[in-house]
Image (cartoon, rainbow, N blue to C red; front, side, top):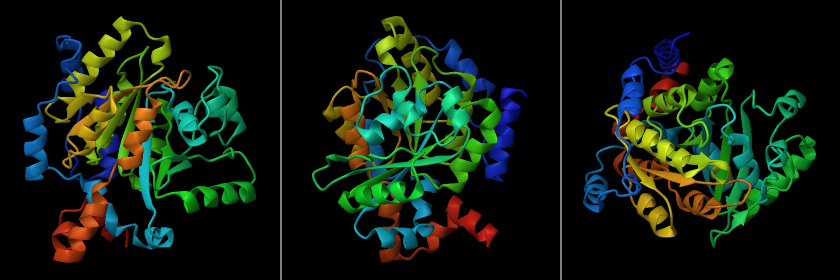
Length: 342
């Protein structure tokens, strides 16, 4: 099946009026784009970010409107905010490994120990590949310190319930990772997770050794079509040479800056870069983290981002309470889906 056909099929299954996103034109642009200088991606004009934040030109439909889908669950959490993060990307990009490191606080041993904590099935353990939609949590307390989950996904239900309750009770901000498959044969499963789990953010994992692949573009296209804010993690940097990282940076810059995606890539090197991205309420600024799950490089910066990100649905819910939810519902992709289902 061609790349364009797969993308159009996936988009059609989720949106009746979905735009054409990141098809062959974007792929050609990514290949033909000139390699930027080392700091080209990191340099995002402050004036452009400020102007976008002030105008509020773009509020992701999925994040803003899913406020209508979650009030019952969030009321049960009390003052704890639940941030739903869909983890997508090509097979062997290190999605499950990164989730294992983030949720447990234990670095990978480069032999699959971290991903083994989040796999549910024996065939996943044997192949090292996710084949189903998985949910894993971590939290951040009132001082934004990580609260880790100490139980593996394959543990007995009673053990997992106890561990999850401990994480939720200690957390001010809860992060639910939706672990999705990266192999092409499981694309329908990935689309189901992106549409049925109502994520607030799409965390796109890119293998620094493989670069932006066909399935990376497929997943990016679906996330953009759904209006999800993007966060990019370039993984396995402990094994990559400088030329690999430069090539990945060039590819990501071309794809994210394309007319279809319309994003402003920001290479995150410090806490100041994280704060700059978080200050952009339009979600055009797309952070790019260069992370190693083995050495732990820049994992702390990614944790800072997850600890402080505020999905648009929380702001939208507050605005709807003050001004009425009529306009929000009218412009809401998720509300249209819920109306159709009911």
